Image (cartoon, rainbow, N blue to C red; front, side, top):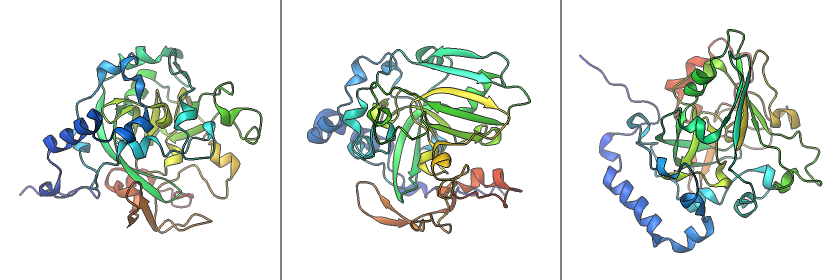
Length: 320
């Protein structure tokens, strides 16, 4: 007998929003039913972005539903932690100053052939797909996003790391001339550029996505254009935005927030409702755009895919 075991974040098929309804809703939003909201988002790059013709990408049916409704695009694009552009969540206007073409990605470290690749040349080496994922911020709010991108494992294949590579170190841009948070002032003591890291085992898991777009179009700057990472089972600060370099390294990277506050932010940052942040509970989360408070789930509901990555590491601070 074939027994199907649903993943922790799946819901019964009967409760899934029909595809035609989902895409009708998307078209309605894009056509102007929410004109005021869309004016606030201002995703005007769709006509000029060289990758615009690649959207919308084909949905991956394995990640076609996150168990909750998709967060409204206007809420998502206008509520972001992006300290390069300030501490306010409303950084969308400031982020538009960042030029996203030309843009290059450097791949270096323990790889067979280090290279610097123009972003659109990289896009030609991959196949885009859409995945609907939950996103859980360490600040105890959450959302659901239809991301477009390609698996991180595909980038590993392109890089061809050597056997010495145990971690991936990601680095964001450092442009104080356009990024107000990086200019002289309050945040100059921050360890710019922003750095994050994952293990090789995490990178090769099925879940990590190199994100290029959302809501069926290229990413807006406020969400990390032109390339960001999304790790749906980890707190959001691990999902680095505006990536310019991926280094394959033997030693574990020390991430941006780990440098600033190691007592509060660790390397692993896996979602766990039973492990509180030093200054607040992680037992529940507020759903962005609705104000609803819901229970948080271990690994953000993706435990079936990732729990095995951490066997034997129980002595580490896996949940901060």
